[in-house]
Image (cartoon, rainbow, N blue to C red):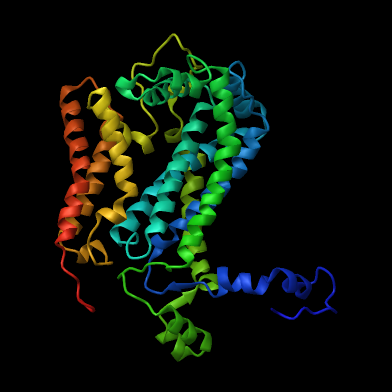
Length: 414
């Protein structure tokens, strides 16, 4: 146990260090949290996500000051009070809308980076599982937030999505009514999703982000080559402080070296972010949702936001029961990826033979499902294409198991 300095002035740095071990905490989380040198800008996506979540929280607090969570007042509070009567209310709404959309773009980049470089393998399974849990939580947060403007698409998307909980032929409509608090989306439904969006889900997301970063701390961050790094030896070389020893070291400290690179990437990202906020905010605002919710008037075409379209298109081509099973399998398969991939290699996809083609096929399939999910289901050609791509996605899991089961071990230095 460290000796306490009794002469230290209360609340001085030394006084706090004796009681909270601040120096040790800073070493563990910053100055001696070691990151491989062999990484690129894609490794900054985690910090970009954390920063975007922070922007969403701050903008959400400002919107919360004027939002009215009632079926009579919600639509007007968003589209008239905030947008026209509150000073810079439009800016906070645009920031929140763009942030909600871009956070999923960054999540998908982060997800596919992890798949490409095999960052879910060999001791890093909990990193992947906690990351996928964050994806589910962000999806729930986005869906609950989409309900709050109480426009036409908010209402009918809520109606369609909650109907999924009826379980197909199980017809568990009493469970759906329990979720809604009524037979149809109404005040109880809006109040529950308001509570989820502004209180419960953000708390769970913050706790899961902490857990996700904790899982990164122990098995260490992966690198571009999937190389096994001797972190203890490399850290020793770095702490020697000489130019020669730091050249030999394969790691850098998180702060200030890696963090400065993260900040540069975030700077570039926020230039794009605020360009969209000021000049192209329309893409994050569904025009149908500028009509007040009307339970007696169904929109011609009901669809979710772009980040849910691939899942929606897996559900849509099949019958009710088969569609729900396909939808569930697709979500579980992503969680189970570390256990489906049987390869001994932790390496970029470009070095892994058939896996390279599997990866790019998966990316193309998900983009195709996203594009098809936005189209009306009336065209038989697009409906057939949706079925083909949905089946193809479901077959990607077994295909991954087979090709990685026979994947040869990559020799060191290859």
